[in-house]
Length: 167
Image (cartoon, rainbow, N blue to C red; front, side, top):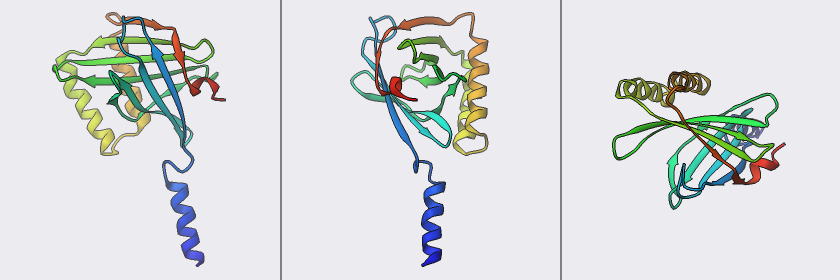
């Protein structure tokens, strides 16, 4: 009986969702960044905040789990998504959420074909658990930095959700 109880407790402790808490965020733009509202679901687990899902265009899921980077004040949360579309184009997005001002800054650039192989390689290493979420985030930050001169910047002011109530 004691072994069974130990296994159950250990299983709960090792489970990635045992202590998960979810927050949501929805932003409505005037059409410059997105014609439809963009919704994000955040998941706080294992001392990290993750983007669990990203929804856009009639609630189609367009992204998956991605580690965010929060600054010490936690009033700014940033994350980076790399998305490949059916058209074959790949875009990199960086989001900075100002929870104190309910403001989302979005930066976007088209990736060059030369970077796609490196992105695919890093993504595969992350999925195969050969690199950590933090290393993958650092790779995306470095890639984002290389596009800093060609980024388009968008300010989305109409945001709401439970993420603003997070302590």
